[in-house]
Image 1 (cartoon, rainbow, N blue to C red):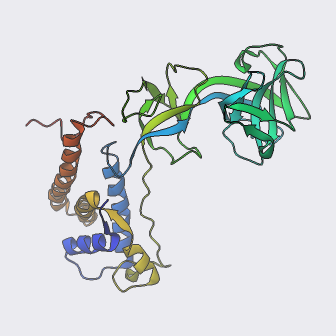
Image 2 (cartoon, rainbow, N blue to C red):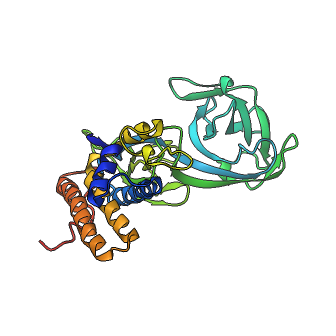
Image 3 (cartoon, one colour):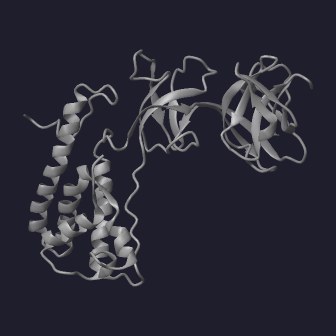
Length: 333
């Protein structure tokens, strides 16, 4: 997608101010205004093409383990259905990735009880048919109930090998904001059972978001370990390198090494004019020129509304995010 440079943005704001070279602190204030307005523009819509990812496969976690306070505490984590062992019993794997991974499994060899333990990564295999094989198990906690059909049905657990605390397993159906499977997620938009927006229709799930992620409702198959998420990636604000103390050369053309790096930063074209005029409006308020700032704010909003209008038009036929409500499409026409 098209971009302009941070140097061009600084130059435009400086031109709007009508100043020559300003003080380093003044440029730094403008940099703060730019980040504030960048964040504001990003948050006006879930459908900015630059930040949306459509129907990406993500792990659906089904168990939350908590309560153990010894060993390495990595057992306190979310777990997902990895597959069945050779006896047809479910194996759940922790989201944590270490040299030893944590698992919940049903141990037929000893007492037919569910266990939580850790297994070296090199000693775990999943074959082409999805059968899980594991060796060199270190058990952390054993179910007191024999033959429970699910680890979630176990009433109590007995710790092993010096592990302390009280193990608790909670049923979940959650997609996490942060996962090694892909980008971090800033905002969940839609969740489907299968890959959506191709040739076939796919079941779409309702969900609610909490501090950890999106809790998926009414999952078709309790052993499903994947869903397909349409989401918005997080915004990365501009990181400006400055001298100590900050100097104008950190921002102007032909300045310091910092200045060259700062000015080369890519600025999304769709936000460029809005950030310039909105940051100028903030600068005017800083100078106590509130009426002029209000006029400039309206100019900035005009640029942003134009970009939102483009999204609004596309959304009439866009199945990725459906039609959504914005300031623009609520206006009387």
